[in-house]
Image 1 (cartoon, rainbow, N blue to C red):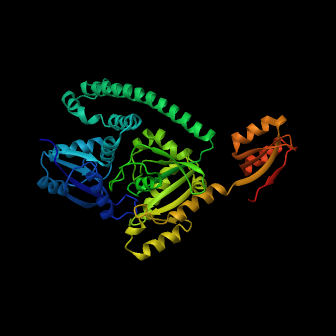
Image 2 (image 1 turned 90 degrees about the vertical axis):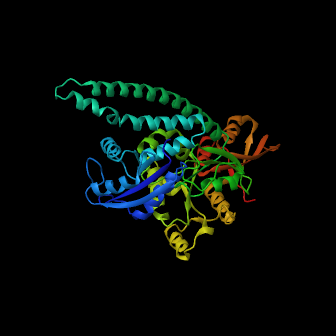
Image 3 (image 1 turned 135 degrees about the horizontal axis):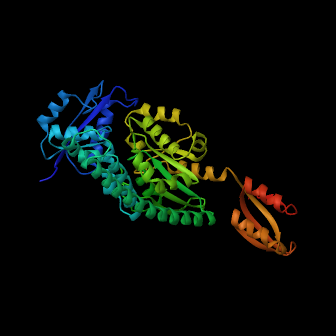
Length: 430
């Protein structure tokens, strides 16, 4: 019989700069374990002033766990463990021990449903595994002894394992480059079609998939669990104005997101970086909403979106307002994010403001204009089709051409008039 329950320990490290209370971090760790379908037998947090180099936690805590653990237990430490600490804890406790990074990798492995998703999880897992090779072979080093320059059997085995993992990593990266190439082509096609893209981002379990399903009618998994969505899903949708946009539901973020995952999932997260508009979906009912917002901000920053870019391209959407029990909570959030949209995707309330915010974003830099284009200037007409949103093109006998009703951005209108100075653009007021 294998592992059938988990014990969750959150080490409340004095050196940790996190502003989150220990009980909140512990509750999140329990939910992470529950996300892989494992019942939690016991969970507790321990204040640690001085982390032990060998085990992180002290002898008293180890003894306490020993009373609860058996060979069917999984001990989850809600922190990063070194390979040596993990090995020592397993030896002293007689059960499997994993840290927060390994737990999140396990969840991602279960959630991946496409080839690209599985490749990215495998890359992250192999990168993580490569850094922990010392665990399996330390006993060989002890048998050999000595301190010369030549490696012993354990060292040679580690080198063989490392080469094997490197070969696998190279192979997966090559396959992922093909994924990136395909997605780049798809993105370029959308851009050529002048279809704006909107990416939903946010802390895990903020309700992005519920919002996505409400908007598009897609059957994306939207259960109340962490990382319910892993692979990006896209759907085209006409807004109330008739403008067609593409919504992309993306993987949720979390505090202390493993660097292996951020690196491995760059091809998926490119949908975030390249989107015309980012909807940062928050869980308005979360007592840690402000802290979770900062985590998402930091991950986006690590992807190359600086503060200026985020300010320009992000609309904040506070979901689950129907679940807010503290009336001061919404007031605090509105003060912190005065331009935010408040809604409930589940109850389908607040969507008028939601659609208006999106329409305002895309129309802020637009100029509806009428331009008479002679047939002899077919290149100008082609340029308008490529760089603007052509509404109508009607024959104009007087101009020996067409009257084009087209919507152009400020920049493209200036480029057009500079390139074809003999043509004029009359603003259309409807």
